[in-house]
Amino acid sequence: MPTKSIVTGASRGIGLAIARELAARGSDVVLISRGGCPEQAEAIAKEFGVKTFTFACDVSNSDSVKDAFKQAIDALGGVDCLVNNAGITRDGLVLRMKDEDFDNVIATDLRSTFLCTRAVLRTMMGARKGSIVNIASLNGIRTQAGQANYAAAKAGVIGMTKSNSMEFGSRGITVNAVAPGFIDTDMTAAMSEETRAKYAAQIPLGRLGQPEDVAKAVAFLASDDAKYITGQVIGVDGGLNA
Image (tube, rainbow, N blue to C red; front, side, top):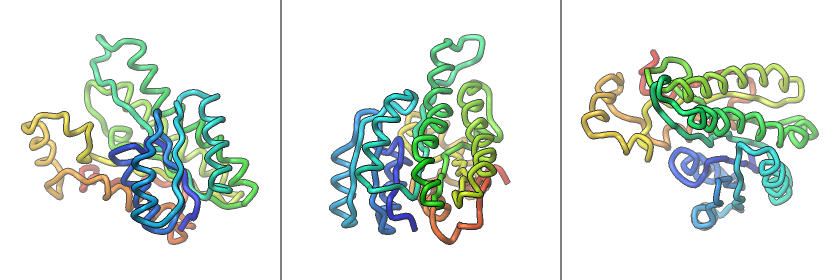
């Protein structure tokens, strides 16, 4: 398992579950979010007996990423694992979609993956080891109307994952993606019960996933058990994309 991890979008939902899972397996963790999340970091440190740090960062902004990641790597004394989890949605039909809704999703969900990956590369390459796990989405593989921005961003994350795995492999760095399906988070909680039930009925396992389901897949890909796995997309979707 990694002993020094950075997780973006870590204040809640899937990101927080990932930070907790990595900490439970013995990793010190930096939790990155737009406003920082000291309460969550403190709670994880207390529960699992690891070191935690948190830094505020706009992951779509190059200068903000450079500053926050320098502090993060200095605090950890290096970095073994990066989880690019930060993301937003701004759903809408293309005819009515505002430019800023398209641009903001691409910036937060896709550009951030590039910026944050670049920010850890020198450290990982110097150590000749590391794991990068990108959180993509089922909607980057098979999508639906009203998500042109989100689908494009997550498909881009998958493409970037595959390209980067080829580029970094000779330095001992693995790059993989996890593609969650319908997960029980704040995002899906905003749906009506009728809509949630409709989606659950389409899932072979018959239920929405939990953030912890995604976190365990991420922890596996970050571990030594997956050291010969790279360039792959692991679906955590209850069989929806079978």
